[in-house]
Image (cartoon, rainbow, N blue to C red; front, side, top):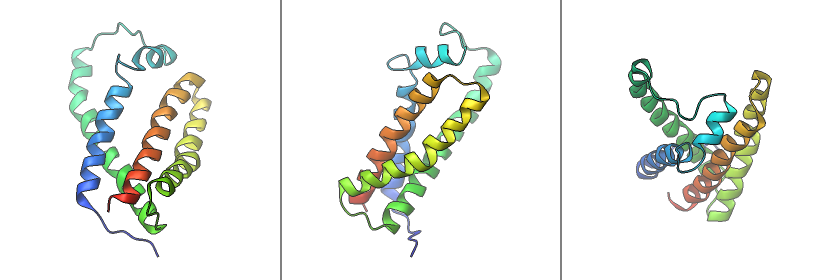
Length: 139
């Protein structure tokens, strides 16, 4: 049976952590420069007024996406009755391989460089595996 119950605290905490971790992942501290170069964006690019106007919507969509991914993982982890960190981690890896990786591979048809796929999926693998483990033990 599918378990659609919500554990509010883990949902909110992991969604915020996901948003922050994504922000750090694509920051100059980690992978911003190689990611931008692979996308054909000048790493020295400064934001235009139009870019700045888009930021609130981009932040909002990032938070909403984080809530959705954590909730979907919560439903799957709880429905499969993963109760320890390593079984949750394994489910997270399967979710990543079955959904995030396969959808990312389809972006190669758009002409994206493989480095973009590697950087993006590094984040997805890390978060899906980690959140799977955490959601299994934090009900």
